[in-house]
Length: 453
Length: 130
Image (cartoon, rainbow over all chains, first blue to last red; front, side, top):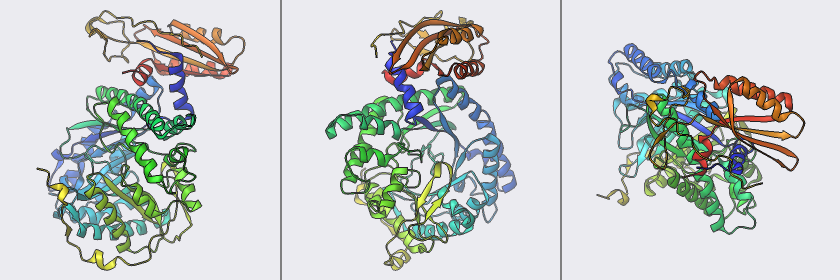
């Protein structure tokens, strides 16, 4: 086994100049043993369970960061969907549970805790309903709690009652965090085909088929891919794909090494390595910049979907070769507010909501971190969700919506969220009504693709 | 940039983990070699990058000696006026404090006007090799 000086310098350059990092180490914790009819006892149970599993999470990840010299940006926790474990509690809402999660997150020193979630693709239990109704208040009163609701799957179809409800919930969440530009909505994701092992927020939760305690790792590196593609001399698209594959391979290998070592030290199982190109507001650390490096004048113009398809596929191929534990979302993220190139594309007028929707057909996740005018109606938000859910359902993939109807804003305004959440330009929505369609409710039946048995 | 190889081989440390009293506690993971033997590595790659000046090697190696860190291999090049030194360092002390060593290396780096990075060798092996 030999190490070349140029390999050493390449790795160091990736970290120091191209923003290569482990975006998140997320510990998944099973809370199923915590259920209790008395909510105070239940809250005590989940608090002590989380602290028992995660008390060394931050210190261990910091040790690993220093051992390997690779930055680990976020330490997070995901828990069993609260709607399931709190179902037996004799209370009307679950806000105290969210506050307990927040307190545990503060105490453990982590960045975010996900799992204030419900899975309602085919219908709602009383616990699901209580959880969904608690979301606006829970997200307004907590700092680190993230929430998600799965409203569709390829197997079950789309629960349009839940979709209609989420339009109102998102509006209320924005209203209750009006003083902070509606930031509550940045912690709420509506999913189709939500993965059980996703380490990325706001959509992480510890799924039903998962082990008792698991470490999932999310690796990022749009900046590295961007630099690699830009270094090519007059490449063909095949050359670009090859280059992205190789880069994704290296990033994945590093993530797997870190994940396995963290899991080993914490006596947890190693779950998945999620290789997602997650942009940050830093210049160059941008998925839009990669698409533009392929030859598009500005992200969002004709050809963007094709370029993104190439990128997403090459990332997956490189990742699959490098690790046998690739899971989660694994693809390219296109969150507008977190990607400096996407923000510029919106401001230039080259990237619209409709184009973003098309792009979500070929990449991971969906309409992410998009600010729309504060007066957007709940029905319009629900209709945007329904469209995205349909894409996920028919294409047997995860799609999601994280949309912020920022109170008091109009098209063209900039909404500042701070940190990794970035700055979102307020984007226009269609003015024609979707009210009657959304009000019909019921279910969009599972598609023919679901009949695979 | 030279294609030269700086790390020659692994040093097997007694094979069996149980009898590796000399392996620092922070590196307990086991690496499966091509031969299937268990090996444990306590080696670091130290990279020094900056403008060339008198005393860089002396300053860096003095701090390494103070922390009982042995230089197993060393290679240096000048690339576009940038001094680049890559060292493979071996740690045998059981009570080795990585954080203190990294802080000391970083401090001497600041003093000499160079960037000093200390990383476990596995990061390079995993990243670039199957």
